[in-house]
Length: 171
Image 1 (cartoon, rainbow, N blue to C red):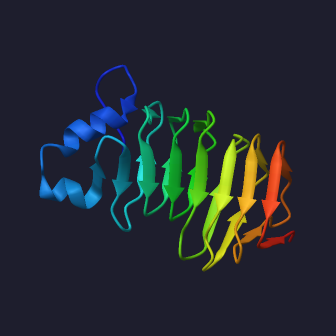
Image 2 (image 1 turned 90 degrees about the vertical axis):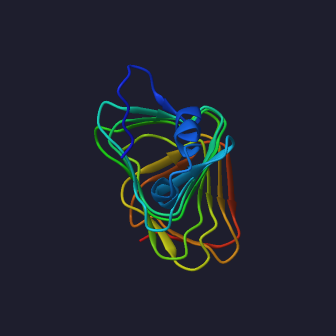
Image 3 (image 1 turned 30 degrees about the vertical axis):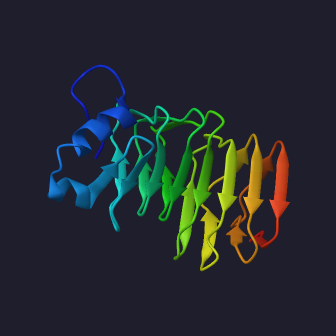
């Protein structure tokens, strides 16, 4: 759960400071090295309602799910996600010019709740990445070789560049 007590957003720098306390229990949950925030295997990143997570130059590497009930602000960073992306109805995703890469090894789901992405890549070649609602990306959508994206009957809108070397399932 991302949470903080002050009025500002929780940033990568805050998490890097917390990680520098060398608490072995904490490193099982996440690590931060000043350039990338990584979660442990099976750890879900939950951004609670009314809270802001601002990456602030740090990339995000999530081994598990992301559940956004607050605000996630990305400028140019890359988010790798091995689990499901759930942008709750109350959640706000501000993608900047960043890229979200779905790189899991099991089935993944994307719930955007109408918040658009900018750049998206499906590099999950082991299982299908499925849209649970309408999806849009203002930049580039790339479906890697041997990757499968299922639209599951949802609208799919790419404003700029669409690259498909894998499989796109409509239903």
